[in-house]
Length: 331
Image 1 (cartoon, rainbow, N blue to C red):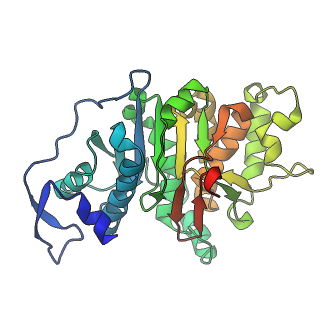
Image 2: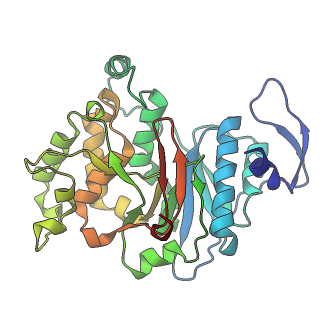
Image 3: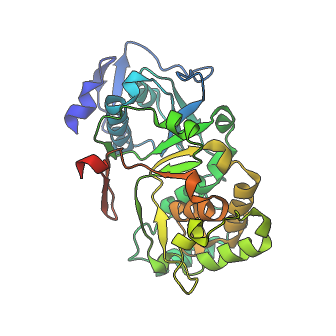
């Protein structure tokens, strides 16, 4: 970790580390300047890496570590830009240390209290009681729920997405382990894929007791948005339900996700998220953004519009569990 942190400080000179702040202070040879527009290396599409961070020292270290691996395995040959979302006022030192990792553009976007926070109709006392009753459940924090709501829907209100055809979401602290010798963004375009992931797993039942009922209620209200398939086995929703029609709790991890921006900005998805948001399950239970997004994918897309990355090696050490996806040729 220390080596990763130090290898890309070629543009900065440490000055001191104050005792009263979490962010080291640097006397820099240059100042971070926000790009007027995101430079794009691919004439066929506009794309960027996106993530969400806080302004503390640990978040900075995790962000730089993961960006370093992305650069090493792929982006140093392409220079796709990064868009970093945050709820904090990041220091100039923070921004400079992040931007020094890549030759591509880096843009920082501040999210507001509505986007990263309770909705206008949330009963905050009820949310507090729900959190208090789930003390032993992983992810049972306000920050986890705020981030789930942000990444599931409110983030797509940002104008930056109007400039992007595709985005690659990554999680600070994860590692991309193997060289990527093709352009995943170009693959998505060439093969008409809407969304992609590398790991599927199962959610805990105690976090989503009423989620699937809400999804079925939405589906009944909007039958015109459910894709028509020739064979039921082609339906993604059939993969996520048991023989009795109940949700089997399967979902796609989205901490590595490459997606077409238009899917999340579509009328269908925006209506779905608005419905889910009003149900308040993010706060009154613990509905997480990957589960919400996975069920939306199952409602609106066919299997051939979804891609599973079997040739991208990635590992993530989570507080909940350690997950890894390895290229199929190296299993």
